[in-house]
Amino acid sequence: MIQRMADVRIDHDETQRQLAAAIGYHQVQIARYETGKNAPPIDYLLKFCKHYHVSADYILGLDKNSEWPR
Image (cartoon, helix red, strand yellow):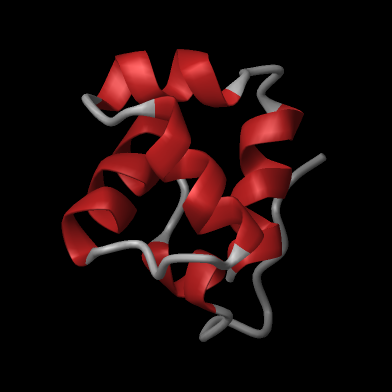
């Protein structure tokens, strides 16, 4: 999950700081989620998925048939 979130953000050419500003989080929080130091809460996951128009199933690894379009 952590790697998928970072990959989606990077594929959209956004920095952690830009993502944080867009969804109302601090950059430090996003860095901790992406490094695995903290688990992202559900509200972060929802905001992340809405921001990037990606399914939570993909991010969580539940949809094995789905791949992020590159």
